[in-house]
Length: 89
Image 1 (cartoon, rainbow, N blue to C red):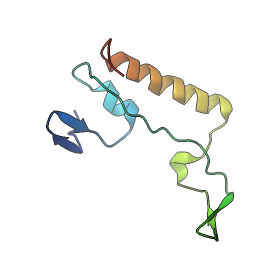
Image 2: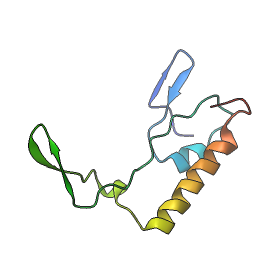
Image 3: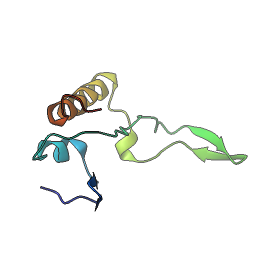
């Protein structure tokens, strides 16, 4: 099992691929905070502090197409459901 990135006062935070980490969870858990890729990195730009800024966040945020993006979201949601306690959030 990957060690927690942060572990204190019965709170653990893991850093890595959610699919890899959730697969190794030894026990059911109370809460999952998810921040999945929004696939907004498309070589576009926005305005930040009055200046033009790239919207690209990294390769992890580039869309692989609507169908593949949807499949990925189904996989991580199912992985969460498998380790979440019945009354978890």
